[in-house]
Image 1 (cartoon, rainbow over the protein chains, first blue to last red):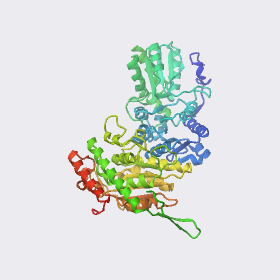
Image 2: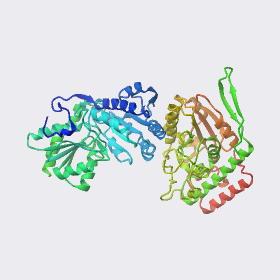
Image 3: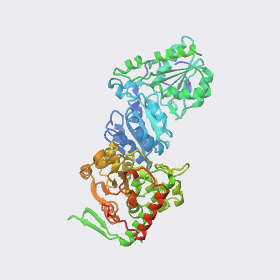
Image 4: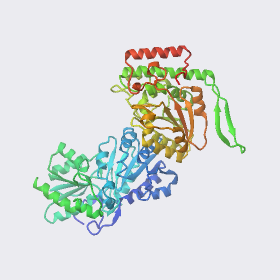
Length: 329
Length: 308
């Protein structure tokens, strides 16, 4: 374990030594069952993707509270709003390209404008869905949700965090969008890692530069930081799982103390985490910034790791972004 | 006023209900509801003229349905708008919200003097309904077809909780061009949401012209029947037949009132004129409309169906 890792987050012991690999969606599936046990009002709506969105366990545990919608994401968003108005806590789930992609207008008016307590679950998010190709690679979902008033946007980093987030969002009375991927990704947190909506967690202390990352890119950022520590560069790594409302305090502190910021996300460069961080930095403490993100183009078919490499969404891409930003410091 | 009604239940041989309950209403009740419809129409004219924009034709065309629903059919309590067991109404063709606002004011959900604030800065009467802004609004609306899915969610929730309240939803016929309508109809039909009643405002007009020219809906009754609904065609201005249609209880099936209405009904120079879909009357036109409506009332509140 690196000494720079922040002990209060109880990160996995084997984080740099072949960490466990589990899909984040499994965390959602287990978390929503826990949420269902804690609150009878939790219901799950699904668009013909029960197994792959990991709703099968909920369906088995609470058959009367699982609602099959068929392939109709717009209808699902509206039915979710109606259920919420009647006191239910609906989780509406499909792939992120469709939910919130296809049903954005319904999310805007039926849910957000009306403050419907609906939890929007975007599965198979990001380019790591791989062989299905660009049509199914949700790379714009953070942008189109972050702009909606009343909506909280969460991008958990791994299996454990997704599970905790699913439980936590069921307890707040407002609409939430949460995205997670399909593939197995490193489990970097543990059962003991604290999770709080709206708080960015400084997983690694550092004074030369900060990487603010979300989703699976947090792991890649930690790996990049370890690599660079060998050449004497001290990298701070922040897990910014809540994109909205963003933790301004932690970001401003990082800008002031490290003087340079790199953001890293599995999303388009326009409108995602990078822009959210830039908004805070530009207003409060302008410092040089670089973005690790999809550079305004569509993806393509390929294996997840091939695609992450090709588009620089990995530790190597983060290392070069850090080197670039340090030259501008 | 609220006389007890005559109830007729048709039973099958095994004493299970066949499906039809007819509730008789008195002439006095009908007259009261017709008079209320005229009040609602007057409110609509007043609020639209003051607002300077908004949708006249659909609001006037559905006043009889709103009067029947809110003053006879629905179980609701304006003094306790969040009453858990209330019947709920969702306006999916939400651009005709002046008629809903007028009805809510007449029912006592909020002070009637507020109707003149429609569409003005700071008003609770937003150009399209905003849930939470005004008591009695069950949903926000505007982008078409969203309301029917919300209503389906309300009905599903009542089903899960084994509640006995009814959910009503109105859609416009032009609105049925939207794919989401048919997604919702599939869902409601599949789940046999018998607590759900859809009202189709079949006025045959949408912005670009007649519905059958823009995007034909016929045979609409057959389409709705094939989706698993019990369809009742009804004159949307005949309160007695509206009541009979609403009261007809269908077991294990959702219901549709295919309500034939005349856009602009009650104001002669607006009736069936597409140009009145999305515009308000000016001061002079409003005065003319109000005097026509007053005449109607002095004739005993009767709105005849001579234009059909």
